[in-house]
Length: 422
Image (cartoon, rainbow, N blue to C red; front, top):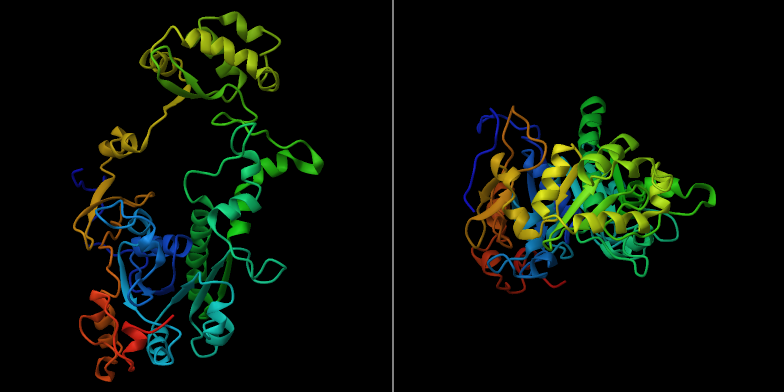
């Protein structure tokens, strides 16, 4: 895939919103790294503290991107990697000097781990009054689930998402890590709000982001649909549970078309211009969305029969001419090659330890500046430079080469950086 330049008038040298903001992150997996990547996109300096040697365990999820993990490539561009054993006593001086010049600390360690390391907001606020601390966890602080482990699929389940997703016979998880993504994005927007608040008050604040609460917020429609004990939306596969026809339909040439009708006016046009059966619009079984949903089995059979005599491209042409919303059911290669993304020049490239890799520009283009799109780091790639910046190179904490190579150092103050035990 060739690199492209973003559409619009943004100048590459223009200031970005978060230029000058430093973020330190004790992060792993997806939620916190996804949050901090958004901050880096907007110009923030993000220093990612990783376990010496192995680094963020998401680096080992797979090796699909020229030997690198797909998850890690997605969430970690434009960051600096500092290899540091935060449990080692020798790391205290590094963290102290680092936090003294940091604006935001983000962490999604195991429940209680940050507090045990002395990195809770309460422990840090007096010494670093302008520091914003963002804690991302499965269930948030307090309550009976505070210390319960949480992963994306488990939160999809706990939040009720699985109960309304899948087929009538079996629930299904989302194909992407939506619980992690939702928590990461609420952390991102909350950090932006906290920076604005600090500009007014001069003080940092604590942000408590719960994956459960993030997903429950996204479940607002099905929850209110089931308000006061009412029947919740039924699992309906790729079709909409409460609007019909809205979902995938097969074509006569073996393709699939996704279409969506939002109101009775569109239903009337659909019957006339697409199905060629204008009388169906007045059929009492289908005359309202509630009726169409109640009789969806009968209606689906009628649509499938008519579509069976048409090719996929012909159905899309009819839908387009009738101004009925529709979409292709793309696989991943279809998305990589999507004509709209290509036409809007949404792809660029970033550097990495395995060479140049394609990367999607962040959604929400701003004509005043270009997003930061820098390299994905190797484990500990920036350790020596950061330690030198902190004035700690002379302490022997930045022994050249060890962080990059992943080798362990001998037992010494350097072990906090390069090879300390878990």
